[in-house]
Amino acid sequence: MRIRRILAAVIATAALAGLGLTGAATATAATAQGAPSYVTPSECKQGGGTPAINEAGNLCKGGTHDGEQVD
Picture 1 (cartoon, rainbow, N blue to C red):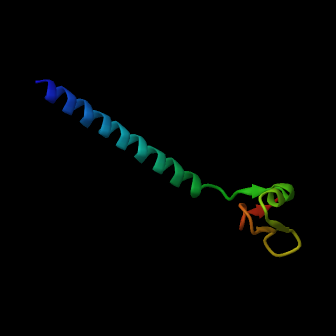
Picture 2 (cartoon, rainbow, N blue to C red; picture 1 turned 180 degrees about the horizontal axis):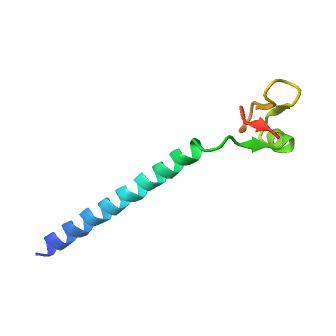
């Protein structure tokens, strides 16, 4: 009887953890596909990139903001 309660608790915990991971993955996917992000020239530089303001697209090149549009 005690083993059944422990097993039920383990299964319930695993199910709730699985739902939490699924929700986090869905939220991450929704954010990744959202509106295009813009960074300032200083944010681009702080992330290790170079703002290419005079080139087509005004993109940040390199660093953590690589490919994001500079506004």
